[in-house]
Length: 135
Image (cartoon, rainbow, N blue to C red; front, side):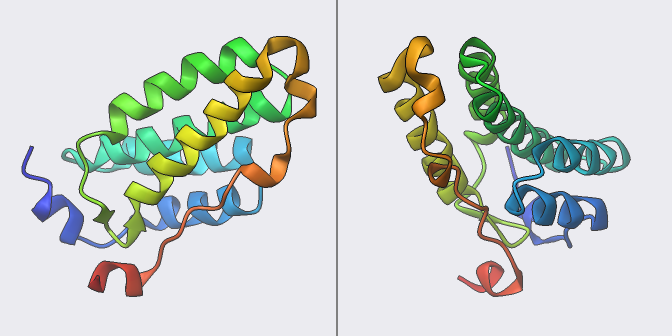
């Protein structure tokens, strides 16, 4: 994929709203905003937005104690995020992949029976902004 042109373009306004909501722990609302960006965008960047919204859904499943849903959706999210550069449209994609993997590994460690013990501080915010695009 030639993501460079997709990554150099500005962030869709609804994607920015979705990232803010994600970082506030409002994963359902973040999903809704990112879905609008995904539907309105053209090109491959749609997959990036889809991957981010899927991470939010996995986190939502963790907060609701849905172990199987979290594991399933995490796998889907990583398929959408795997081919993107470290930074795209000012989003720290590599950090998001790493943080999502760490969260799901903790869920796997706890297992279905102990998911309620998950420390929600492990659900890290997404680093993003214009300064990230300059790295």
